[in-house]
Image 1 (tube, helix red, strand yellow):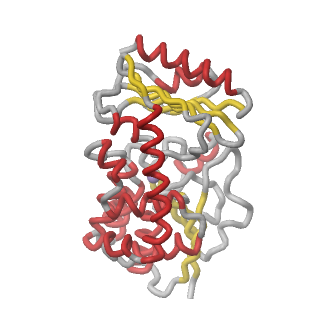
Image 2 (cartoon, protein in one colour):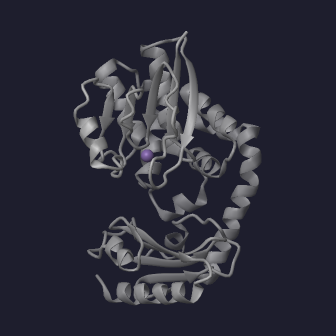
Image 3 (cartoon, helix red, strand yellow):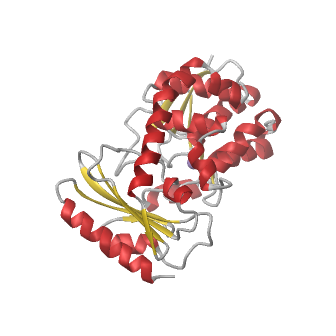
Length: 320
Ligand SMILES: [Mn+2]
């Protein structure tokens, strides 16, 4: 019996769904008796794959960056930042195995992986439609409204929230196994090991909604809030748009133990503005994408963070 190591994007619905579908594909089309071992991966600067991580007879990375390690057998990703250095990209372009796939246009790795495994290796997608469709909605931020993204009523959105908060790798593997077995998402979300820990998480989410409701102000289409004095560590980034559907931009200031963070975004449910948010954030030492970005400062430099938030807000109020 062979072993398969699957490295996947941790704490992420698309990452877990990709790991599940790859497992299912491998058992269906390559080796029915394979023993699968998982490893959740987190983004970070520099080399993130520890030495010896590819220790299976076959090794796969899904929904996560490329590695030129010769032990890597399978790879599927859609992140724009998939290649940390040009050497990795050149290594990928020269690959002749036919088992490494990249599409930065793909909205989710799950749907991309499923499609590649179907087209190239005869994998059957039919039992996995629900999982594939929700991964596409979640990773592509294709929610019908901010209200849907904040209410977290659908089982898939509850599982997404559970995954984002879960810190027990054994439970993540249990979820991957349920996904791979094509169990319905409503059935999984109702199981006690998901539903029980989700209770306090959803309660904290509700509290964050209340806090932001108190703190958010809108002027000239720009919503601002400052929760740097609150112990509100994480909040769903769509809350301000559910409170102010007409908002063009959101500028929020929050603080953790280590840093003060200015989060800047544009409304996904309105035509995207011409303004490039990444460029604005870069001027203050931050970065991101054209539609969403952030600036981080040391936690004790709150006065400076408030000044940066004010300047960015002024600029966005004047912009188109
Ligand atoms: Mn993804």
